[in-house]
Image 1 (tube, rainbow, N blue to C red):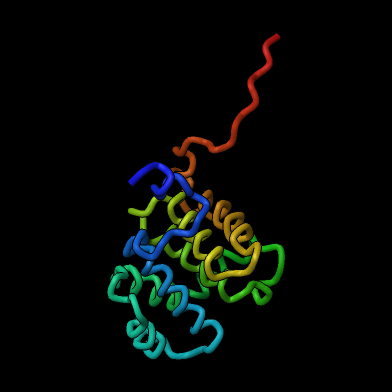
Image 2: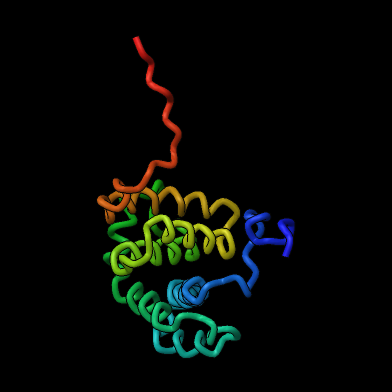
Length: 171
């Protein structure tokens, strides 16, 4: 493989299906299931059965999918309570895709300490880009960045800043 065809040579292109990790796939299937929950109000067991029959599910991390789907549905009120103060509009005006992505992000912040906070945000932004509205990923990124500081303060504080600081002026 030469440099022009390596995945790192084209970071702005969407990942190919073969390049996706089992956890990334689990998040995608969980988001689809959460969308059914939010829009259709179907029973979780029915959504779960339907989702597991979708093409490609066997390549997903089913344990992570289970944790995300069932955890987000069971803790929906808690997740919404954490998200709502950071929104610039009522929760009912957030699209079901962005809401599901935010649920996944908050759930992972709280229950998946093995997933670094920046990875949680990146995965959620990618979900929003793939399934959400035109600029939904920007909204998700902003909300999750603020939630990361609240839910994982030590981890965020220990991370090197991505912002460039202006050099200090000397007298």
